[in-house]
Image 1 (cartoon, rainbow, N blue to C red):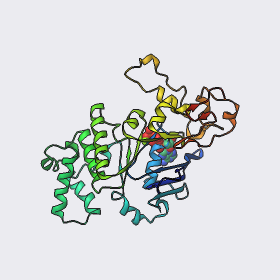
Image 2: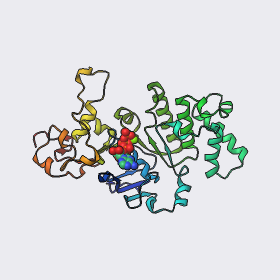
Image 3: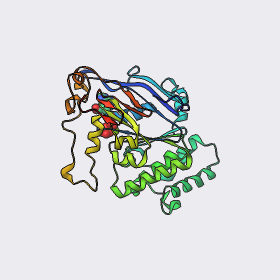
Image 4: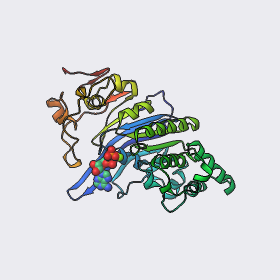
Length: 334
Ligand SMILES: Nc1ncnc2c1ncn2[C@@H]1O[C@H](COP(=O)(O)OP(=O)(O)OP(=O)(O)O)[C@@H](O)[C@H]1O
Ligand SMILES: [Mg+2]
């Protein structure tokens, strides 16, 4: 999917699939998805709850507990195949090369250790510097992520931090070793709206300073639009559209993306003009034949019911998996 003129991507995911054994048999939660992230780029992965966003992002660092063979495809980071890397080698990359921030900071911080000590431990793993120097770095880091009185607050335990402060500390931990790739899975969903905006601008500022690429996972196209230059839209385990953010907003080519756009509240649009997508995303055991979106799609016809659309290139950086998709939008009459 990478245009020929682009340099080698930092992250190159090819035909990634994730299967689970369930009581009702095997289900495919992520279905042959391919995408790239380039150095310093902020890319969004958006989609409804259950689309497979977290599984995709967790697969990159092999954080999914799933028997061998049920995760297939290739995940290359700087050309190295992460799926076949030895555990010890992957552990060296975690945090240093590729870091991850999760939705709920409280579940990532250990309640029995002081915040400063946890940051120090994370840094000690990857940076070979004297402890005194690392301690100074921890304070500096807490200051950079906006923790007031950082020297004192480093001695706090996680329960003494508010949700926003904990997430700042987690971001500090995430960027402490200046990783080349940061995977942020719903990093602000647990926070209230004003804090969300602060945290997002913090992530963006720090990423720019360290030229860190970000894979930003969110169900919220509004958040994605503030942060990302390029977006991938995921539906029921597949990427159904990929395009620069302006194209997604002005000329979405997949009816699902269009539905996501129409359901975003906007200041100049009364609530009566919101058009939520009818129906719900299918469960993993009920993925329909043909286009997986067709039961919810107002444009679907017999072809959509029978033939699964491939992700097709519509324009230089625009791809969509829809029979009706065409450059500049979709064809309602086709
Ligand atoms: N261990 C597992 N066994 C079986 N199914 C799983 C497992 N983990 C995840 N799933 C299923 O895979 C699908 C994708 O899950 P995932 O957590 O990636 O969704 P998501 O897009 O991140 O959703 P959300 O926005 O709610 O975080 C869901 O239907 C989920 O129930
Ligand atoms: Mg998720």
